[in-house]
Image 1 (cartoon, rainbow, N blue to C red):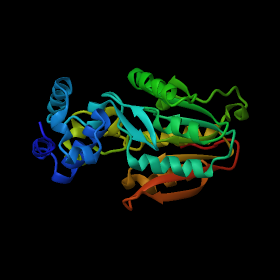
Image 2 (cartoon, helix red, strand yellow; image 1 turned 180 degrees about the vertical axis):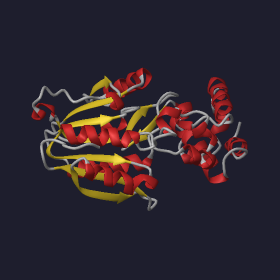
Image 3 (tube, rainbow, N blue to C red; image 1 turned 180 degrees about the horizontal axis):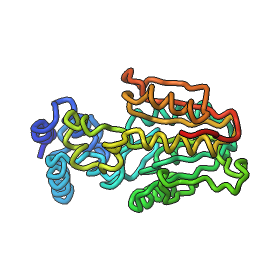
Amino acid sequence: MTYQDIIRQLSTIYDTGEAKAIARLLLEQRFGLSMTDILCGKVNELSADDQQELQKMMERLLRAEPIQYVLGETIFCGRPFHVAPGVLIPRPETEELCRWVVAEASPSTHILDIGTGSGCIAITLAAAIEDCQVTAWDISDAALRIADGNGRRNHVHVQFEKKDILKAIPSTTGNRQLATAWDIIVSNPPYIYRKESSQMARNVLDYEPQEALFAPDDDPDAMYQAIGRYAAETLRPGGSLYLEMNPMLTEAVAAYLQGVGLVQIELLNDQFGKLRFIKATKTTYSYEGNH
């Protein structure tokens, strides 16, 4: 199988540019071939075992399985992360969210990552922020196993816990100050509307976990509201909530966060000009009201 054979086959399900990018990533990352090697025909000189493995990987790719799952890993903020079916593949937009948090965080902060998936946000922050303590939640046992392995692989400590934000109750005993725990809460929750699925690629819809992609049909902002309520209760004064979100919900979520007592709302566009990120800060000890 030649490099041109790989591109020709992949072009049956991807446009030519993406087919070339996938082919190059496959050959570089799995078989150690540089672009110079590829152009000099080194693909034809792979061993029989490597050719057999390449064929098996191509069969998976031609079923539209994401290249990250086929390779078993992806790079996020310059670090390797194992990914597999059951965890969302980290996106470049989420790297922007991490950079925002890192740029503003102080040393020795206490951070909570809600819906950690592969652990990419939690691990990136733990590695980049001096002396921070990071806790990360997810409801998936499979995701937590992968995230824990990624923490060890990247030589950082994160406390991974199985916890559902929709059921999280601050541990107060009449004194609301006992609930304050976090300097930063960060989350990239499921936020795609089901009606958007017609515009999504097959390799996303057929393979990535639905529960990590789609907001609930009947209440698409439920996750944001739960995170907002929890943040209002448990952030320390001056602490901040950072969210990656559906641009269609930005105004509604900003208003809700203000309603539960989070202020200084800041909005940030992603690299594609979409209103993707929101930050809200807590100025008082507790949230009072019926929201």
